[in-house]
Length: 416
Image (cartoon, rainbow, N blue to C red; front, side, top):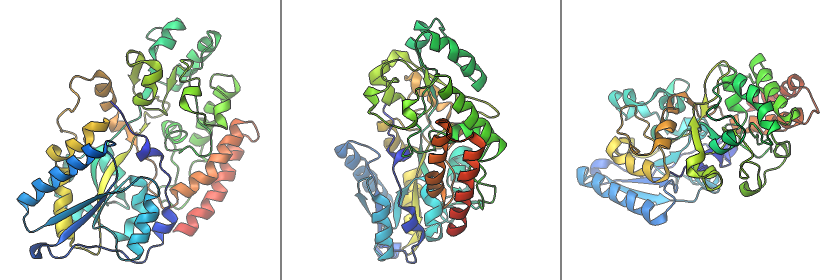
């Protein structure tokens, strides 16, 4: 099944969004035949299938709710925050929009809390990881409609060629122990994308979380990645680069996938790629899905797609529509085409005959979406080059993290 990286990797113009002073909304009173203007993006990549899904859902909803009209507009992923922020500032924004978690903090003061329209039963039905992904300052701000997970993927062929059949690692220690054997046979244990354009949610942060660390302090006012856990994670990663257990060239460049050692079947395991990305190179039968690696904790990156209600329109009508979309039977059509998963714990299995998806689903409850902080993207901008410098031996891990934290604290203070 395909799993889109777009939700995870797209760049955001959150500075603009955070500075909004007005919020639009086209909906009027539901009883007066108001319209719920909904902005979505091509979660379903096939244009015809995407349109068919939303058209069918709108028709079903309006049949049950004849006093509410829903208009769904699909916009491109590119520059979506700039377009949304501009529309909201001009009081021409949507009543409902598809958002990912790290947008929620930026739009927080313009959103209707999900608890205002989502029943307690519906909230209780959510996986804890999904609910956590939409909760800012103890308040759920949006309604999850899909989830993904990035488990550890291992190349069966590499392990067999290295004489390590079925020796798939579960911990940092086990991967470190396998790395010299793999190197002797001409393989890398893993690879790491250190290019400063790569999102840390998928690269360094999973290691930080696995080491027991966090990106921000508990109250969100300071950077916390320069903790003992952060140093442990960066030191462990640097060891792989220094000893040739991971390709050094990827620390500074991001070549096309087909040009990488991963695609050439020279890398044993990755936590930064989806199965759909490696399948053309590894082959379906060689993809082994494993739980996330564990040091102090077992954590994987995953994303949560949501629908959020903006203030300024008829929030009752908008909330009724969002609650309808989020129902298990209705959201399944959005999840399945691209290999996503239901955010409800008791939802029906969408992939009963797909062993790979079955294993991926087991990782959902150990996922993190990344920090929900207004400064999250800005902090990545100062942390990524320091991580890169440490991996290249220009600074010690501690010095690199401390330097990044000093710069990050200034950015955080300006965002608060």
